Image (tube, rainbow, N blue to C red; front, side, top):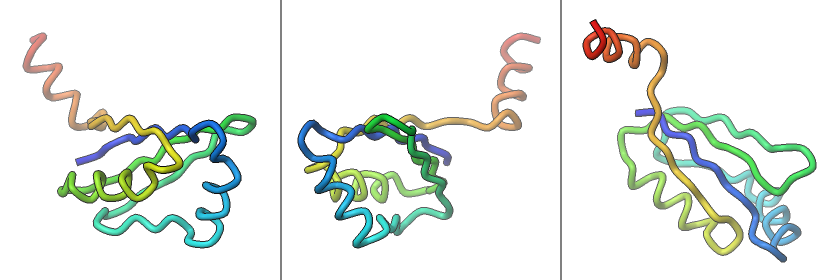
Length: 90
């Protein structure tokens, strides 16, 4: 299942979160693939992950919870959503 996780750095934690990110690379075990996006000029970004284990998402968010606030949303691709729309609206 695909998920989008939106993260925002908590007030006063920008430097500490950057130091942890630079030191560890913020690995994301338990997911098949992921892409991370940073919004220039802001303290937020997004991670797109593919995992059958939502506990992996929880673990990663918990590891960074001191520094980041998180929102996690399960998402579908066009190829997955299209047949559902066709079923409902046909």
